[in-house]
Amino acid sequence: MIAVIETGSVRSAARKLGLAQAAVSKNLTALEKSLGVPLLVRSARGVEPTEFGRIVLRRARIVDAELRHMQEEIESLNGDAHKLITVGLSATAEAMLLPVAVARFREHTPNALVSVLGGRSSSTIAALREARIDFAVGPLPTDQSVSDLHTEQLCSSDLGIVVRADHPAADARDLASLAPYGWLYSVQQTGGPAIVSLMRKHGLPDPTLVAHCDSSSALISMLLQSDYVTLNSLAALEPLRAKGLLKVLPIEVDLPPAVQYLMTPTMRPLTASAAALAAEFRRASRRLRR
Image 1 (cartoon, rainbow, N blue to C red):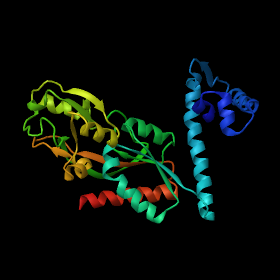
Image 2: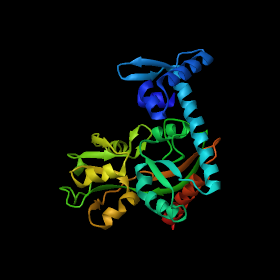
Image 3: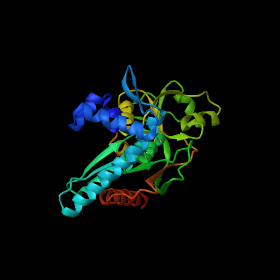
Image 4: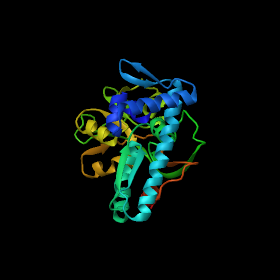
């Protein structure tokens, strides 16, 4: 069923799995019959899950991930595994922790491959619950409970207002001077983007929001090639500031820091390789706290 949903058709799923189309159809029919509910429906976009199908798909992905993890651990014990670890990262975690964590991890696990999923906390946590990623690093969501996850605070970073070094407002010293410019954001608070809260706190009109950047590369690319402004983690952008490409404006930002958490599933153990990578994220965060 997973392959059918991911490819959009029974025929494509059969091709991906190396099975006859009739065999895939037979298995789907048998599954629907055993559960007593329809799981798939055809639409203009191909085969899509019904409401029942979404429940089965979510559980099936967890089972599939556990089977793959079991196979990996068996192969690792035999010494012939090629390890794949998939992590979900916020833009801040991607910039602050990922390079150091992966570099150290690869020193001890040279045959491992790390796959990075970006996005909002809500999407990475959904992926974590469905076992599409091994663990996540980012802020805790403000719109949902994470009681089913183990959360561990790793590090925090003060926020600041940043522009490219040759920005027209590079000498600005107050928020009002930035009113003409569009804003890029990734840091959110309860109720919306942190920059909106900050502007309202100072009695200014709401800022013009241009893009929510869940990827650090997207944020940096847009900052360097436009007149956009961002309220963001200073530690995440420090390497580019140190190189003279970005500038932190001397404007006081009275907001709590951006806190990054390591999130792992409470009821699903990490594989040995995923646990080793998580340990390197912890080590990278301790390095920042010194």
